[in-house]
Length: 395
Ligand SMILES: *Cc1c(COP(=O)(O)O)cnc(C)c1O
Image (cartoon, rainbow, N blue to C red):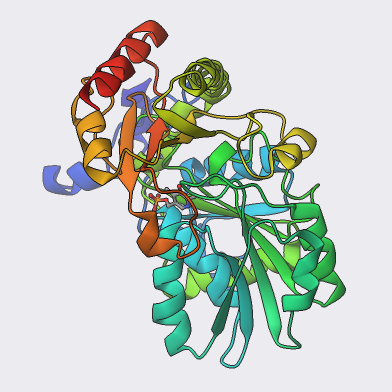
């Protein structure tokens, strides 16, 4: 077999054959696991094909930055479950967030962002966007159709994040989209909370859906990656163009890890949904807890919207302690936990807990008690409950 193929090839020095092997490996390999195909250079059959290449033509491969079979497999699966035209991958969720703004705004434009937005978006608003002379207005996540009053003639994009980071308020995406579209603005959503799995963003009016693959899709806290999915070919082209111009791409090895996580994502999500709900209901019975901010519980502002638009909830939610428990009590609670780690991000196998200083980031935040955000992982539910009891004992 191999000797035969080898004998039909010219013989070079051994060093050359380390680069151009004489013996081919058998083709026709099929595995249930996706392959990991890496590239900077992609080889072309002839000069004519090289000359006619285009980074927008996804029926061919042109260079590592425009994709390999591994990254294309991942982006296609995301576009499929989100129901969009196509997706583009970015090296972090935050990069995907930034590239959902940058291709669509020019100096003098205005964009609207919810006040409960993922905090780094505020940094982007006050940093690069401000330098580009793009004005960012903040709106109340409960605004709904009232967004119409905030729209200006130069409003190009309305950003939605539902539920909002940390404080979990839900926004009325269909109402916001209708008002934005009436004024010719695009609607982009940070769909990280359900990975687009329990919220069909395009059916609810979004034009662009962004999420951090870092969270449930990867699912094991071992990489950062993001995606932008566009509803139409024209929008996808604008995002892809920006990615190609600036060389935004992901490593096939990381894309493989996300592909490896995907088949278990629905199971992991349904499991943490169930356990988080159990814990949330139990936490609500605790005297030390003033509020449980979980989209599936009535305490959560916009709970009715969750019931109408979402098909599930996930493992991240927050509790607000009674007024008498401030920052130091929250720190004591969290530091008493053995299973909930202290750290950013979520969506992996391990549970996490953090507290946030909302007086700083949300000027109108009405509660005096400290907020603790929990990420429920895959540990035994009873162990997690016992762990939270340790937190209460430390108050
Ligand atoms: C984590 C997160 C991001 C950013 O993702 P990274 O991959 O960590 O950069 C964006 N939006 C939301 C809502 C997130 O939770």
